[in-house]
Every structure is written in C-alpha cells, then in structure tokens.
Image (tube, rainbow, N blue to C red; front, side, top):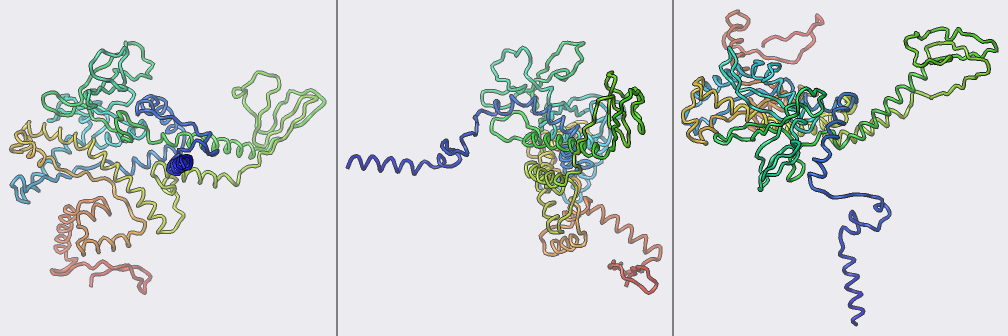
Length: 514
C-alpha cells in the first residue's frame, strides 16, 4: 500500500508539472537545442546597446526597408510638427469662455514667436517643430534621445530658454568611474530607490576621432535642486522594469533586415550580370587588343595583371592562347524573389507595428483590407504621438510658459503660488497630421453621423479628417459668406447647397445653388 501510494504521488507530481511539459520542457527534442539565458535589464539591454545602435544606424543608412520603416513612423507621428492648442481649465481659474479663449490665443501667439524661430534651438539650426522630428527620428534610430534646457540670451528674442538635443551615445559612464554612493548604470545615476538623479554627459561623442582635447564628462541633474524644473528630458520606450536606457526600434528585426538587404543586393548583381552579353574569343595568336565593343577605361582597371577580364554590355573579349571561357548562366530575374521578400516584410511589419502595405507603400488589397491596415498602424502612431507630446512637447512648453509668466509677457495670477493653478494654466493639446482617408466621401458621411448622434464634436472631426481647427474654419467661413453676399454672388437668407457634380447637356459638371 505504501508503494502504491508513493507511485501515485509521483504520477500526480508528473501530471502537475505544468510548463515543464510545454515551453519549459528540457526533454522534447524540438526544444533541446534552444539555448537561452536569463539576465537583468543591464545584461540583456545595457551591455548590448552600443552594438545595437551601430547596426540600427547602419541599416538606416543602407537598407531601404529599414529607412522606410523609420521615416514612415516619423512622418505619420510627427509630420511637419505637433502644434500647440492651449486648453486651460478656465472653470477652476474662475474665467468665462471668452476670457479663456482670449488668453489661449495670446499664449499660442507668444509661443509661436519662440517656436517658429531658430533661436529656440541652442545650435540655431532648427525651429521647435523641426526639433521634434529630429528628436523623434533619433529616438527611433538610437532607442533614445536627450534634451537639455539651458538659458541663452539672444538679441531680438524675449525668451531665453533653448532646446539642446544630445545624441544617446554621449550619455555614458565616465572613465574612470567617479566614487559615489549612488549607482551609475550606463551613464544614468540612480539612488538606492532606483530614482534617476543625474546623467553623465561626455563633452564629445565617444566615436569621434577628434582627439585634440581629453574626454571629459559633465554631471547634469535631471531636476533642479531648488525649483524642481526639468534640466534633462529623456525620450525612450521602456520594455522592462528597472530599465534605464532605450532600445532602437529596429532591434528585434536587425538580422532579418540585414539578410534581406544582402539578398536584394545579390539578386540585383545577378540580374545585372545576366543582362550583360559578353563573347569570349579563343585565339592561337597572341593579341593585346583586349576587349572590343564597350571598352573599360584604364583608370577603372582593378588589377595590374597582363590579362584582366571584365564583363561589359555587348563586349567582345579576346583570350590568350590556351585559355577558355566558361559561361555561367545566373538565371535571373528570380521569379521567387518577390514572394520571398513579401513574406519577410510581413514579419518585419508585424514586429515594428507597421503593416506590410504601409511599409512598402503598396496597397493592392480591397478597400476594407487597406483601411484595416491603416487603422491598425494608426493605433501605434497615436500611441507614440501621445508619448512624444507628454515626454517632449509638454515639459518644454511648461518651462517656456514659466519664463513667459515670470517675464510679464503672459498674465497668469497665482501661477507660482499654487501647483494646481499652474497645472490649470498649463493644459494643452498637441495636434499632428491627420490620418487621411482612402474614400473621403465615406469618411465625411461617417463623421457627420457621429456629430449628429453626439458621439463626437465638430472640432474633433475637423482635426481627425483634415488636421485643421474648426473654430478658425468657422470664422473664415463667416467672412467668406459675408464677402459673397456683398459681391452679389448669393442673396440674403440663401445658403449654398454643395451637391455632387452632375452632367449637363453641354458636357460640363455644374454645381448651382438651389
């Protein structure tokens, strides 16, 4: 009985082993060759970042699909720049709607004075909207981007705050590592609770070949000790707890992109060779005539040997006595090339959340399938836009607004006295490019129904459809209607009825008011 009981317990233990029979099995033949190891975010991410950045940038510079993936994401998320739309909590501030609208319009005007000038850039090269796309592009390519907010006075500019972008490589652990009670992880200094205290920034890029000056590091605290204001803005996407540095967007698909690039180059070269028709003539007499037809310049010769043969378009090559040419037919173009590339691109698109159709800019499916692809992509685009607005645009705008209020150019009573009042004044939205429509008529009809049933507002639908401002459109339409009445194009009380074009007997499309 004891033996049976022991056997039963052993059987029950085996039956209840769970994942050991599946993903954690060490006995299945299909999983025996799977070599894996576990490490912290430092071992898995930080220790590999330098090589990941180098390969990601190399793919961006030389692999078309990698370049397209990053630029497609940048263009849809940022476009020409995320624009400020001030949205203060006027009820908490005891303001009426008209007062709030006047305050918001004045702040947007003052902000654009600074944002649309290259003086907002510490290097005086880009305005604020161009800095957005540069920071976001660096974020995707390198996995992260840093921004400092120094004060640099300049003539004819009432605001002194500047944006200084720092490439990810410059934030690194000093050599030798300074003695400190705090821990420094890949240039990021954290306290015993894991909170980020400061960043160690090298004066020159670690990969720079300028050795005129000895490399030095500056320790910059993330927040001001007295004011608590941002000193350093760190753009990155976290994928693991306790992670301190960002991973390039292309990291999961680096191998696929590189192999696909090599395969494409090999197929291209094979097609070029296949397209050349070269005849080799064997002669018993020595001749130095070389190649007839399309000659190769002496400057382009890559060898100093007596007989240097190269393929040419329609060329005729004379061979030395006793030599014979063996012609290899590469059999190109390869009919399987397109299908293979398509399959790999689908996997790449799934990993980076860019649908295959959008990745290669080729929509060959139905309207519903194409629209589904765009909607799925825009989930990711909106998520990254929200991150960019919260982590980059919002803190910079709040620091700019502090200077504007402190200098007296913007009136905001109680701004520095109560954090809640300050938050009410700092409310804002950041609008970027619209999604666009495959069938504009269907999209507009759907927008009309959403507004009519109270599911949305005119302002929101205007932003979603065209990226415009409904209030500005409304004021412009009022002016246009007034001018048309004054010009006699429409009479008082008459409203233009815009209809679909209809053919007339004269063969033209006419649209007339009823």
